[in-house]
Length: 299
Image (cartoon, rainbow, N blue to C red):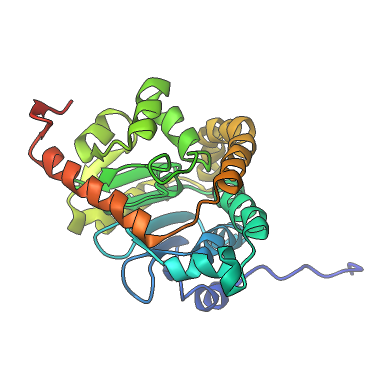
């Protein structure tokens, strides 16, 4: 008899309950796990609590050997369009008991890095993102193994317009997928990238009508489940190598630069700024949907 015991692995019913405030979860008998981000049952309102819960979720589901494929999406018509100012103010505003210097490390540098580190390193099975529409922090979805997007999706990052350095992973994601010329322009200019362009530039794997996103994700999961577990999991590691290298080369240093500027400029996460960016996106999106920008064909 062994002198010690195995440490129990997480049970699905337990962490489904634990994470229910941020994620709806279902798992088929074959191990295909469905996870849907939400806030109070509706579209995601980006907040500090979810910012931490994402990597906690990835680490937890990655440690459960009964999970075989992840389908990850967001509630409603968008990826994450809303913003919970009060959540961020509680950790950033001294008047509310927040400590911006502490938050810069504990909530930004640590939590922010761990989202991508856990996604790429801790989940050793295939990941499928079903991207439903506009949103920020798209790197969380775009760095998954297969990305299907709604045919009306718009991908955009405007950290620069927000007064911040785009160093928390979106830079690595865009550069890896689009190349430095397109990526740097998109981030300097806060460029809204329509669904067809995202497909042409390699940001997403395929486009699907919004109402078919989850159905199509399950079809892909069925294909991935058609081969033995060890084949599926080792194949995943072959395709993850480039993302792992990106994390080693880019993430910590660029995140540190972003946090330096955050402290120097005393920027805050506020809904007012975010909504201004979203409104700007909305006006550009109108041009995109008509196939033109500034009176010219958008290519």
